[in-house]
Length: 99
Picture 1 (cartoon, rainbow, N blue to C red):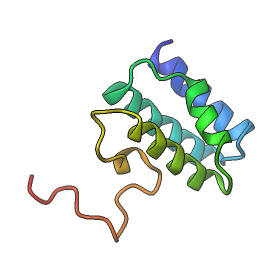
Picture 2: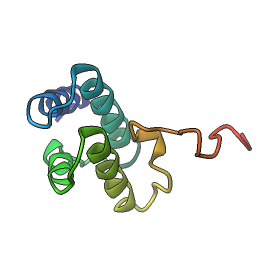
Picture 3: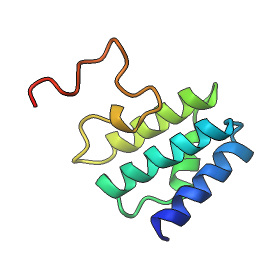
């Protein structure tokens, strides 16, 4: 599955199946695709859907937990904030410190 197909499948399902608005669905699909490219080239849309279905609440929180779960299962990913919708919030460390 190409990354374009992966991203569009996620975007459509995030909106149609999981109730995200269009902008949020697109942002989440883009971030999940980036995670796939960076850490898990074998990640499928169904893997993401399974993680989302195992969580409750609003889409944004479900998505952030799902990406965190996927990152925790990936040996090389030690910080999933880049791939979460919440990103690096005001309580998080500045990602540019030490760069």
